[in-house]
Image 1: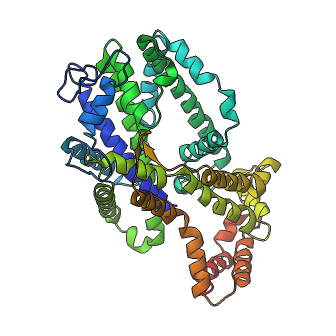
Image 2 (image 1 turned 90 degrees about the vertical axis):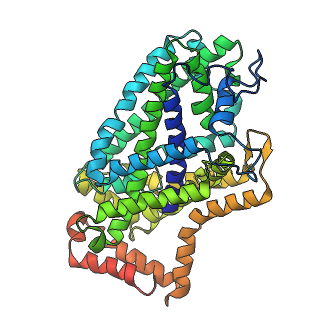
Length: 478
């Protein structure tokens, strides 16, 4: 779980550094990706726009991309400086812990909605916007029967809601015991999915304008991944009146949204370590010192191993994003998490969990949630994970570059490094302990079943439950 968060931190910060560089360029008197008269242009742009000015700016100016992952090339100093700047911003936003992060998030989580509203209104008033909106809303029936589409959608939901990586659990641990988590979950789903829908209108209305201006189908201008944020949308913005204004709005929004994700991921790591070593980490000033070390550690790891500030860094970034931060890894972990919750949490696992929720919120979970915890969620997670393995396709860059064999091996090592820790640790404890699998299972169930009281909070504070948990975690069986 924490390895996936570590990998995500290392990739998000790279995207933020690119966005910061684009934001700086947005203050130019003429957007550098709006014309073909620059020293990095090849002169191969034609009326069919097979190679756009925005594409050449991205590939030849920002990335100065090399011929492959074997050719890492020289340092892109502008990207490196932006990367360092983003780490410094992250540090000063989280160095005082959740309280300081919460104050920063009041701005970083709300101001993007202002930017999104501005971009939405502007996009919907452009010629060709209706074409883009219709492309966004109308489904392609043939794709609905493709399991890959549903698997990708499921993985996106898991990433979007931070399911299975502990982010929501860590943030929720700072709430009071009687906080209504049920209502919070409903609001989270409504706001997150609602924002995604509205953002779709803002993006596809602009892509519709871009297709209208070029006289080509919108499917040819629609991009995914970094191409949407750093090629398609900037290209469309350059075709509007006052392009600098809209470019600044877009990249400010992108940076603030990315910072929110980065804050949460780093806070998860910080809180986990504090909970593991409370006597040391809760001393005065210790948090600030650790945050300095944490940012330094992330920075060195991302700089040394991702090397995304080099000319061949984009190949490494795509490899890292495709394997280490794959949705299949989260699906695999969610199988274990949901099985632990629905089947191991006490002799009557679901009853125990519903009792705790009722004690916290005053509302008992209905039958639908119980079915989800017992069958639906583990089954869907496992099925999606198996489907992702069956449908696996080796990574290619820009649909033409095939990675060498050693790069694919490295990618699978990164993927397995996170998903094998859970079963690997369990097997290690079984092998080094003195008990059998049956004894370990019985010990776990007996310890967890003591939380089945209608008032678990009082039990948690009692000596019995403390002894049970100490027995569970300190036993030679585990």
